[in-house]
Length: 353
Length: 225
Image (cartoon, rainbow over all chains, first blue to last red):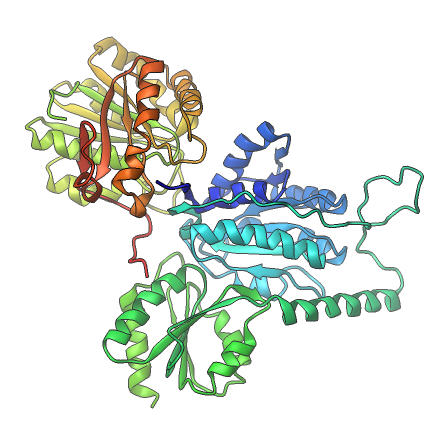
């Protein structure tokens, strides 16, 4: 017997968002994340929430901006090309210091690309995407269960720091089905004295805005925001270490790539290679400290990615290029096999002594 | 499972309830039982998990697969091939139809409904997995059934209980849904055609007429660590 249900990753995100108290969803369909919108369309009317299929991604993200300004938990989701369209709105939300959750179920790019899974929006998610000095909290699940758990976590972090969060998944995680346990959580209402909900004539009105006519004020606002970012980097880094105790080589991978990589790590261990894996769960803040520490004993790193190599730059920065870092990748919707990762591990063990 | 099949067997149900997997296994089974079979992929909703994923196994079994030209490619095109009419019209073959999920997926079946009803030798099977979050009970399952019937203009004639939790399914999990399946059968007046289980679970599950499916296709299939 089990209290589990069998869900697609996309459905798990949607149901978890509802559990987290999100009652407002705005989106526009795009493969491979359309199940999120379809699920919300079925569920939201039954629980007094709002589901709205906007006329475009641009419009959906601005609806998110509006509800976030009113201080309610709100979410949108899309896949890579649609996320590109949302970037202006995301920058505005970041500039107005509002919490919101943006889900990107990545597919191959650039351009319209294809509908198969990818991790090639890493740069866009972690380095800005939109314009200006800002960060998103970027969280990368690796299972359908984590799609649910990290959705809830992302809402909490976003509220806590008034920083928009992005759940960075991929088409595989969105489409695959796994058993999930969705515990009933108690939604902690966060005080939002800044929210634009009407003054009832009892207080001075709040303003939600990202326009600053005075450059000194804009600089000061950016400084203050970066102090918050520093707090996030100090407190909220999440990662998983796998077989790292005595590791001489280290695979770094996130999301679906980490599941494939773990199989390769286990196989390499059987063949006598001391290799482990570090899986960043938060991509921003990136788990720099654990990688830097690993570099004290590890001889070389392998970044396994479904892209032409994006996270690899953060791996190199985290360890100050003190060890060789190589890339093992597929792109354009293709997925590396455990054998390909194993081959990469064996090559490194041969070449980096 | 070994009874003579109807000329046309249609598998419909909630999104992700397991229709494709059952349709493919069912087609292979009735072919093994000596009936000439063709299988048709009617899903115009979901570009993943296609009947075409099993193209190799179907071809090895000597079963013709009729699926949209762009299935399993990057072209997410909701169009059905004209060859699908052969399944409905060519009475030298037994036809297995794999319909898309929910009412949205079932609309495509509607265009063949008149021919199927006129011939009147069909089984319209409702596939249910009570572990799916939007069909956890009999009431919600019946709601989905009615939505599908309205969309495709064909009434269900039988039920398949495909309740499972993917790789983690235990025989007890399936057993725990038996009461719901029986109640669904009672409330709708439709017989349970079989309880479908994976080959592994089938070794432990003995409760009722079961269909142990040898073929298990998954979108992402990698060993769990």
